[in-house]
Structure formats: C-alpha cells, structure tokens
Image (cartoon, one colour):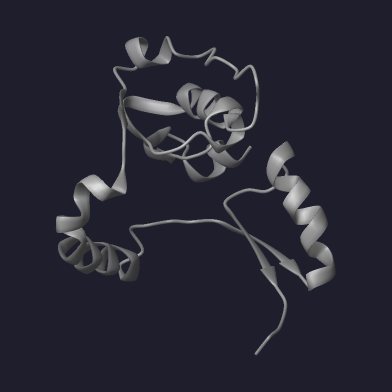
Length: 130
C-alpha cells in the first residue's frame, strides 16, 4: 500500500482538493495531531447526492485539525511561500507523486482513471520528449 510505503508513521499534512473517498482514506491514515487543508471537493462536484465522510471520527481520536482553504486569502504571503517551498523542495523535504502516461492516445484512459482512483499523485500525459 502506498501509505505504508511512503508514510509508515502516518500522514502529517494532507492537502485535499478531491474529497469523497480520498479524504475518507486520508483520515484513516493521518498521524496523531495531523493537519488537513481542504480546498476543493472535485469528486463530489457533479454528484446530485454527495457522499458523506465515514471516517470523520478520526478527527477526534487522532486530534486532527481540518480547515477549509482558499488561496486568495493568502496572496500576500506568496513571495515568502515561493522562497521557502523552493528551498524545501531542493532539500528533498517535499515529496510529490506523478502518474506519467506516454502519448496523447493514452489521455482518454488516463482521464477516466482520475474518476475511478486509478492514478496516484498528479496525472501527467507526456505528448513529446522535447
């Protein structure tokens, strides 16, 4: 399992813009005193009857802090953010995952995979090696 491999002690910070099953799974895998920033619920956007979160009790048991987030509230902090995050990335303190597919012909299947949980991390389609 990806969480066990990369976060054997649990997830410290989770930035959620998917909601639904992804947020539910993250709640189960958070560390005690973990933090969740919620900036979107794309998986629930076009559903007429959005799903509820089944694992919300994790907020209590693990003392997780979850808060809504709009980037426009923090535009004044962007220059400092860019400087600090760039340094963290260069030091290897920030991990991210890409799910890379090759060729434009793979785009439709990759797009459908976004909605069924097939990809891990950011979905990328490489159309050229240039």
